[in-house]
Every structure is written in structure tokens, then in C-alpha cells.
Image 1 (cartoon, rainbow, N blue to C red):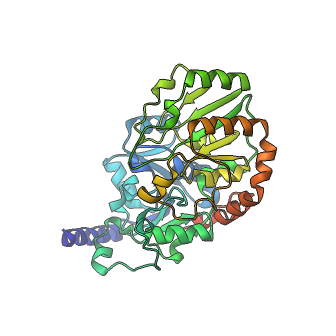
Image 2 (tube, helix red, strand yellow):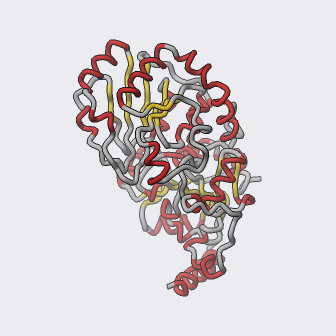
Image 3 (cartoon, helix red, strand yellow):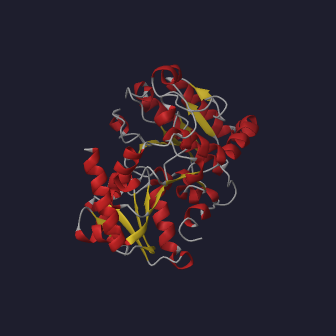
Length: 379
């Protein structure tokens, strides 16, 4: 099998040498071609808006979803769909291939001879990859067979991180050498650098992360009708966006007025600039949310289990989480009440730690900067 993969890559290398590639053509995709979200979406939109200054003539979004294809075509965007001849042709003609997390975000096996950029989707709070097995040694160069058998040679790609510290974590987790790490703002944070929108009611955004054991959320065991009435009195709104792999039955909240559930497929970055408080547990999305200088509450009802029996943490959890920790649904709603009423005091309590984490995880804290990404092919 490895021999066949090597021969296939050799064939594609010859084909790439025959078919001229151009840096004026860029292909972008995300989440196995099934979602239009996260870093790849905002990178695509940024490139579309800055073609002239970046010397780009065509930016293509790759998808396997007919709905996404039709939506983008209706917006006048350039789209590549599935394994069509057009899709294969422009993958071969484009010098720059950009993904969100996996080569299958596009036709990654056609990335031979391209500038390959993995935007990735967050600095790890949780362990993953080599960190999950606590393999935190320096970069280990893969053997020559594995290197040349890798589809599209994505084992030799650039990976984006938001700071030097984040780059070291991601580099260790993904076995990427530091000279392949690009330090830049994540494209998805573009709205978080600007003045955030004011809300009529105090709005909290709850983002529970994925769990390997997929147990139900303790919020669903509470008297939600009573809580909904209380939120109404306090002029507080809670928006919940379950993880797309979450199996908890959030439909029980469908008749509530002040607890609203977003579809799991929605892009959280359409919402982060519109809320007053982020509630999460082990999702690294809060690293991005720190750019808003708004409060974060950590609802960690299974902290001991998660740390010892689930994923565990890539960094010391309490040191890197600037906010109150609550462990039951009742405590979570009590803290929400208190923060809504005394937000300034809450922020003062965690301000020093908040600033420390913000500056450790972001090189660019006041103004977005993605030049490290675009300079790779347009210096």
C-alpha cells in the first residue's frame, strides 16, 4: 500500500510539473468540505476582499455540500464542488492550498507541488495528538517512506498559531517543526478586534465542548421552566450552542423564551462579538474570546474525570483559565446572575490573570495581523 501511495505521489509530481501552477490562484476549504465556518471561512472571505493588494486573481472555496455550493454561487463567489473536472483542474492550477484542519477539507491529495497552509482551529487547552500521549519531545522527522507516501505531502505544510507559546504547543502536538509555524492572528477573530455590539438584555453564550463519554449535560436536569422565568425577571438571555458531536437532548428547551439553542452546525464566530459573557468548560474558543476583554465563566462539572480519564490538559488548567469555576448547574446560573449584576467587580478580580493569558496566547492583541500567512506566497 505504501508503495502505491509513493507511486501515486510521483505521478502527481510529474503532472504538477507539466501543468503550470500560479500563486494568483488559491483554493480554500474546511471541515472535510461539509461546513462553511471557522478559520478557513474567514480566510477565504479575507482573500476575496483583498485580491488586488495580494496579487490574487481567483480564490476558490472547495465544498462537498450542495447547499454551501449554491449559497456561495448566489453570492457571486467562486466554488469548486466535489470531484468535478473543474475542481480537479483548479486544484492542479492553484499554487496555494489552504485548509482548516485536514487535507480532506479540499482535494488534498492534489496538493503536490503547492504551498500548503493548515490554519488549524485553536490552541490546545485539551491534549491532542502527540500531547495526548504526553510525547512532548522535539520535532521528530518522519522516515522517508512515510514522508513520500503522505497524500499531497501535507506532512510538510505550514501551520498557523497565534503566539510563540501557542506555536510550541501546537508544534509538539502535531509534530511540526518551528520553522513551519506561522505566527499570526486567526482569521476567524476578525470581528473580535473591533468594538463589540451592545445587547438589549445581558447575553451569555454557553459553549460546551466535546466529551469522549458524551454524557448528558447537568443543565438539562434542572427545572428549566423556573430558570427561564428567573432569567426573564433579570433580563438575561442564555444562548447555547452544543458541540456538533454532542448527543445531549437540548430539544427540551424549545419552548423557553430566554434559553435559546443554536443549531450545532452554526459558526460560533457569528456570535462571539454579540454576547456579554462566555460560558465554557474545556473549549479553547475562550482564548479567542479574550480579545474582546469580556468575562469568561468556566462550568466544569466533570473536571476531575476530564483531567484524569478523558482528554486531560495541555497546560495547567487553573493557571490558564481566568474566571470563576462552577461545578453544578445551580452554581452556573447563580454565577451568571452575579456577573450580570457586578461585571466590573468580576473583571477586576481576574484582570491580572486575564491579561497574562491573553498576552501568552496572542501576539497581536490590539490589531489583527495575518501577514505571516499571506507573505508565505506573496512576500
